[in-house]
Image (tube, rainbow, N blue to C red):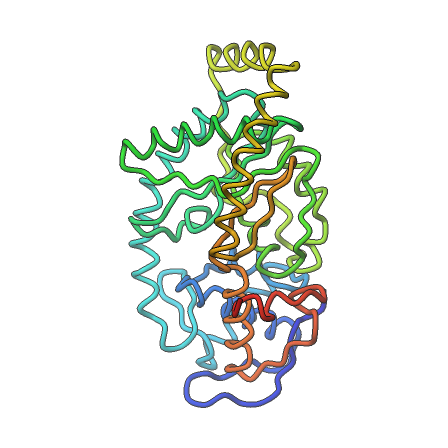
Length: 332
């Protein structure tokens, strides 16, 4: 994708836009998006998430130029927009919190990976980028065997309840089956979520997820490799044998009947909740997506506002592939 913005006007005060070069504009867009999450960036992170193809040396040179001109500030290898230097110690604190959460996330992934018909477990949300507060949930994305998604979900919820007893909030808010690895929402937020997710189990399935969502490259042409925190678990001998045995037991009509019954029970309940709360939700045999808080729409709207504030104009569809996630759903 070409750079999503062109300079339209000078912003006041410290909000000075970059010059009109594609790479400089793209770097500013990357910092503006990160700033919504109060998140300083390293040069490697800028290179990964910049919206135009660029060599790491070119990204570093552009960062250095904008340090010299006062359009960015750097401390300890982290870069921020001017006036946001307080975010650098905040990131250090959040990284310390994340280290503790990663240890627990890996432990729970061992449990989830041992469940029948679970094919992939990935960490998403704030923990995936080491930007976690103590109160933040451990967000989990789960891929299942087809026709066993709802049975899998019920078993995963049992793990969630065990984690809660230990003081952790495990939040598996997105399930898909292997029949539905293609994501329909093509926008900058969704692309970042796909590129940032950290697979801890099911690497072959993860590769299929990335291959099936090549549209992400239109938004993030350099984010095709594994994220830095990717250190997959290796299920033990006993866990693997128990998984195979339980799948053999539930692979026929019994498992199909349990899955249908659980789907009927939960979809009614979740649809009632969706009617009350709204949000980005989908409940089918192959998808259980319960994002009730309009978080994606809020982020994209805030991003658009920030781009405008910095004097950047976004062409229609540049960050949404022509969809309108910034429309009236927030007001419903």
